[in-house]
Image (tube, rainbow, N blue to C red; front, side, top):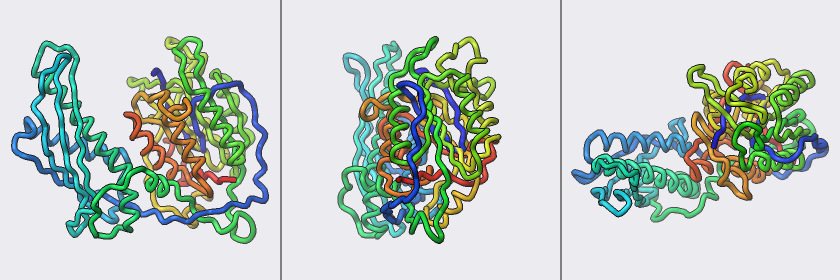
Length: 449
């Protein structure tokens, strides 16, 4: 689909909107009585990848090196392992079979079978699985060797995706259940529930009122969903996604929300200007955008495309630079931008996701934050594929917000959303501070009513 974007962070969440524009009455946040769970979240790190295969499995050393490098990159992208060096494990990968491409009626087919074992520092196998994948090239090229190589490349990519998915679904639950013990685990744990619970473990808060209570301030949201474009192809789920997010934030989190469906550039800029004039240091603003996005590679700039945008008239686009300037000028303490659009990762720098606690939460609330959560990096993203007709990114975001029973910061939500999206689509959400927007190390915290 044709989407373009960049992100900001005062707490702005951008998704695709549908419906009519309007303002939702704010749900009062007084006299909250919230039941909280305290769940320890243990991080793991991947020390290295040991590789072994029978002679001749790969056509060349370069093909073998590319497989290992691609696997490492995929594991980093999926955020399966922490980066702090605690509890290191070694992943042993053994190629069982990599078939010579065979000609079929429509192309060439290859198969790749891999067994992998996760070992602790003592060499004990704590998790093992086998992954088989197939690759096909039916491009119609008259060059047989080219088509054979393509089929092998597809098989490798499919295998890495399946292997990473298996780890995402099963590994964290297995290790968490064992508490990091060294005794072997004979078989994987099915399902992703364990990983979900670890990602979305709310920080325990003793009380939201009385002595020592954390003052989270007031919450506001500008939610924009554009799918009925005048001069560009229409989108499928933007309006629906925006409307659902509006319901969750207003009814379950006490946000005062403004929903804009099929918004023009002037409308978006005017509402951002109103928030700049009216919000103060104790306020939290979430900006959500779902719609088309665009990247100008020559100018190294990303854009949101309002509903009145034209491909030949850049003055009707909304640049990352303009968004950043407006966010930097806001007085709100925390601004979060959530963007579900193509090329939306242009606005952010990466941040380290660490272990959470009460002291951590208090620090995040006290520091100024300008951050962005995007549905992808510098690549096109999927406008469908999620539950109930939502985009796959929006669906994961909604699940994270609805699973929360207490207080979650956005980095925790990101860990969950990234894993869910990466398993279902070839896109990888990103989270970081908005460049040159005045970020001071805080984070946007979602407090369930």
